[in-house]
Amino acid sequence: MDHPPAQRDPVEEALRAALAADATSITPAERLAAIQDQVRMQPAAPRRATRWLSLAAAAAVVGVVGSVAAVDLWRDAHPSDPLASTTISASTPSEPPATPTTSAQTLSPSALPVYFPATNDTDMQTWLLTRTFITPAAGAATDPASRINAALTWAMRSDVVYPVADLAPPWHGMDVKQVNIADDLITITLASGGTANLWSEQAERSVIAMFVWTAQAVLGRGRVPVTFVLADGGRALFDRFPAADRYDREASDQLTGVVAPVWIDLPGIDQVLSAGKAISVRGLALAPSSPLSWQLRRAQGMTEVATGSTTADEARPQAAFAFTVDALPEGTYYLTVSAAGRAGNPQVPAWETVTLFRVR
Amino acid sequence: MSVVARPVTDLGSLSADQALEALYASHWTAMVRLAWLFVHDQGVAEDIVADALVRLHQRWGHLDDKDMAVGYLRRSVVNAARSVIRHRTVEANYLARAGTRAEATATAPSAEKLALDQVGNAAILRELDRLPRRQREVLVLRYYSDLSEAQIADTLGIAPGSVKAHAHRGLATLRATLTNPARSTGEET
Image 1: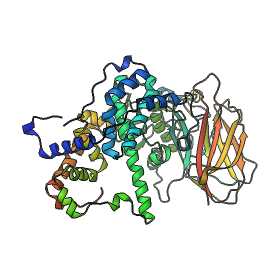
Image 2: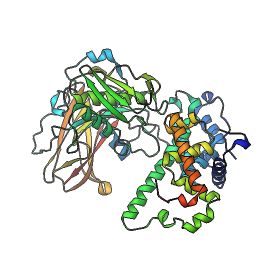
Image 3: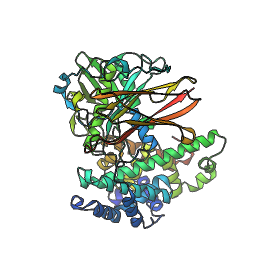
Image 4: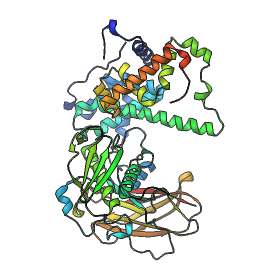
């Protein structure tokens, strides 16, 4: 960047001098010992995620995948494939059992499934797919390409699914520009292939899974493979995965280490429910599942409203669970559903998924 | 004057603790000053870099290429500084809506002071702050950190061509306003 003095632009030189003077106006304090103390104080075990991080996990409940399968896997359709429809009631593993309650909230028929990466780890190394359902804005385009675009755009809303203050999300720079659908292929045009080495390779695979799982689920035609075009002329995602390859979601017997142990399907993130009615909670837990615990907190003051436990059924690979919360007064609430980790299996870590909903 | 951190060689052979000490020794001051240029709060700037070092230590065993650690550290610092600025903006907007004038707006310089300062560092930095965020980041990384276009692109997660474009536009705006202060509108971009 340096130039011979004679060629230097006066504005550049003035700017350089101003920045140097400003920067050297401070002398950083000696903090090595404090930083080393901070390092030693960091918990070694996965933390119980902070509220926003868990919310990110909940919103993304389906988003992260440990590995993105090559196209040959897409032929491995499974009867429990949750991708046959855009509604949670359309496929066996995604359909929670009927609840014997009076709760009446449901998802709109136009609801969009959104899958995105989430993490509960302190060091944010393990990213697992989570899922939520969103309701498109009134008047939103209803063609499949627009719906896929809307779902993915929502998934990458940093303020909702990744409100982590100090790091760019794994999908940074990968805005969806266009979606094209053919009989046998979904083509997603991204602004770029993302930033290489910003996160782990596993996180990068999870991001690709976000695109694949969401696009396939919204389209609702099963495991139509997904490929990518990069608007900036790039040829690889994260400088690692060929954009032109065809990608598919993982087979249903390969979900461990791919999907989060707990998904909350109802209520959806930011869903608005009617006051005076019991709240039906439905979700899926990676089977075999240990008993699940849940906690409901009111956003104002984060006061605990109710707690409980539930169990999932025995279905595999993901088992449904459901419970009911009594009618709530108007307000904003956080619901956390937690699962214990599977002993000896780091791919099934202790996990908590949080969703936020409003009662009006 | 340029501030270039001393290189850290062969990071790949170091343990997490050793890498932390090496990176601190070679980059602490420069990184804190870089953060300062964005947030203008020394305590916050130090916290940003300290947290980035702690995170890097935690992830050390997972880094594919440890020689990329400095780039990771720089990205982390810039992103954190950006987050601080965003948070301040939200707070300022909230206060403005609540009828409370935020300090940032209450201390906007007068036209007379702008004219008096137009040839000084303060005026340059003020005009720099008025640039769009991306242009400002590119110029700071280029003219303070002396990064190449490729390094800036890596730090900000944008294409090298975008770096050139942002630098060009930012400098053009500075040139126009600094050489003709009357063109400074005072608008936030």
